[in-house]
Image (spheres, rainbow, N blue to C red):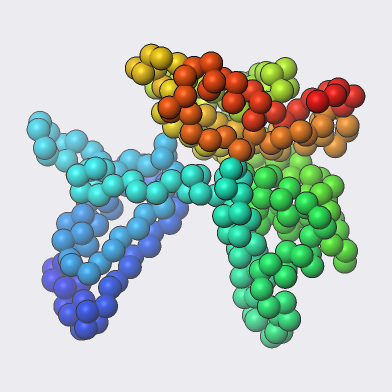
Length: 312
């Protein structure tokens, strides 16, 4: 019945497309997710002219429930009924092509301000996102904001808001962003994980300082799929930047690359115990490189922390 109603709706729309956008999929109870997915598959997918987009966290989403032998299932079969076509981390993390991330987050903040000013009954006199960035941020402060947000729009909005509160009526500085990132990390991220996950994170951070990089290289599937690792990933304490990277001549062994969250290091940076040299986000594909060159790129292109008095 729902399918027929949707078909009638599309006919009345005279050739226009209908987009159904579903966000925060993982907020649905896990046991109910396959049943909502099945409703979408049976009612929306068969109707020509409807495009369904679902925003979901990979490890917290359960799209299919096998109900019997063979092909019997409830839900959506990824790869058959649809495909996981876009990973936002591939676009929003501040790495080699930084211009895309800078443009995206400039527009994100600017559009939020335009809407807010309109709701308050004012006209926002700043006409472009680039002008907004130039007026409101000092020098490299906006780069620092994008780096600290690690490609997560929610984090960017929160850190920007706190940095603006610290700056009061002056342009936001790098220091303002670092303090805001530290406070946001301590309040909204670190306290939400278990003691076991916290111990693992502490070990990872210590290892990063020792290796002078915040890049975390984990073998897949066993290390990358570890429950505690995925807990850190789901809580935005580590950020995946590449999957299935090969670092040697054995093509059967692949690795996932993560960046440890910038907030894990801001205390050390603010106290002057370490200094940032390179944030590690300019990693490029190494699938065609031999193992030695791959590891060389990881070390030379991924340095973030050095002792405060060390030369580079």
